[in-house]
Length: 483
Image (cartoon, rainbow, N blue to C red; front, side, top):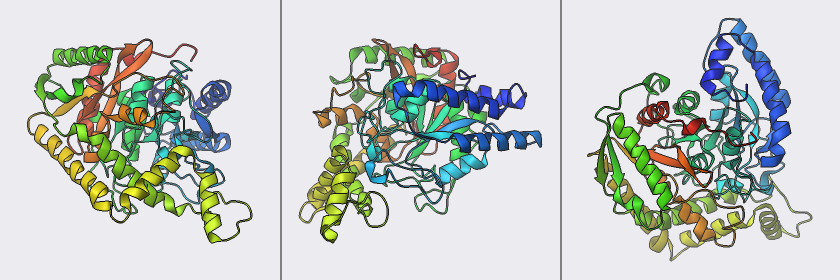
């Protein structure tokens, strides 16, 4: 059962080959048995899962249907879940039980999903390796000595290890696509505003976006269908009709114009990954796609711009964690200033403190124009590059990451080296574009991903291309040894 995709589970439930309750029990036992190796879960919700599974079975017995009805998933631990710990991977929120469900959680629950638990993540989604979590690092099921990517590494590791078929995740600078690449999954960052951020604990509000992590493009289409849509509670949500993503998977790629930016193939890219990307291009050409070299001249400025904008927004967002209203509170504070300082000093980890300090500096008097305002101008240039490119091509293709997953701890002493691993993913967040990573091969036994980017609200186009690619390749079917 654990090897089934979401689509296969939907067909099995519809054909009454097994019940949601049976499947849920199998996966909960598997998580209990195997997750101690991975540390991919922060909280397991066995009682809730079995209750939801029984309800889903009853709904099916009454004639209801739906691809997600009875499907087991997990939520990244920054989506608020009523009455369940929502920690954001931080000591600061270790004792926080959300009083309400995030819109993504409530929408998926209404569709009939079964929540198995909350997955581990980099603290407050700040990281590219899932090593900054207060609950310990997550390990990559392909090699337990390597990182699974971050910040959605818990969701990625759990799905890759076949502990569950799919999970929710979020992407601020690549945190869905990079873990997908590192663990041989398909991960989709939707257009900014496509999926509600209400109840999703904020890191950088103008960049954060929720999306699906699964083994196939078909499964991502199914999960995104349940997540997407306008939400009046979210001021950044966009009222745009949600197409039937699954219905669009089988479109022909004949004549599809794929742009390959020359800037993607510079000195920083592992040549073995470059070869795998070229192989992916050849596969898509066989399916009728037309390849064109393009240029994204301002890509080189994206990382410094991102690492001004994101920490600046984080320093503002995280100011709410002060030890007064909720979250960690220090013992016996002498006064209000002591309460603030010690609660934050004890509650936040080193990476979060680093980014808060960088952001506070960038926003401080005398530096706002020099750093934050300039970074926002670069952001506009990056967006303009994409708009010009999409006048010539339908999608953009390139590597998801410059290197395969690195060893645990290898970049802990050099945070900038870890930041540079986001070079290909950050631009989509700065521009608000949808992006997808899909499996493209292996280097030294570690998975490699190819990234696709599309114009606004063209998630269906990305899913179509990825699905057609996956019908003609088998990278996405490979399973890590021991799982």
